[in-house]
Length: 241
Image 1: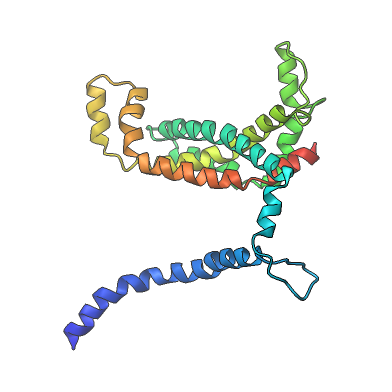
Image 2: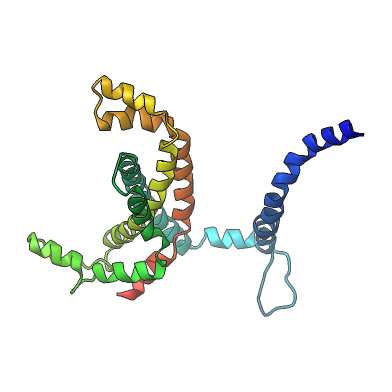
């Protein structure tokens, strides 16, 4: 009996350990997703008691709406403008934080501060920074002899401003993810590279990047998901300054 209980424990325990995750995911993740898909196949009015089945009519109407394609195209542009520089800056910042610094905890906490700041506060502040008449960015451009830019009026200018906002908010977050992966890279590799005369940038390119490639792929996917869901930043930026 003891051997049977032991074998049962060995086989069943791993599934019991991961069961809470799948239960929570099923309730708060899978069920809302499936239910939303089911609702999308019906004519659903919040004040109506009956919801007739209409199949793919909602999707056909969506794909025929020019506003949908305009919103999708603008979102993809902001995604590219924000994600590529953001991850490059995060990689460089993580490489710096991975060096021997005084007070490393302070610098790591400082890198995360922009991410824990309220997105509404960030959007309002950047809306003021990119203001047409009294914004700090236009003032700096005037110092160098450039004219004022109405950041909200132009499509390209507004996308650049929103991308800068997203970069500032998420660079430190991704940098700490990269830093955690970098600290798992064997230090002997860096010591051997230093003896061979490799510069810090060469060590980053030849050792660090290949070693943390799975983490880089994760941040690319994660940033793409967040980038496709961006809403508060352009919404508040367009109305807040």
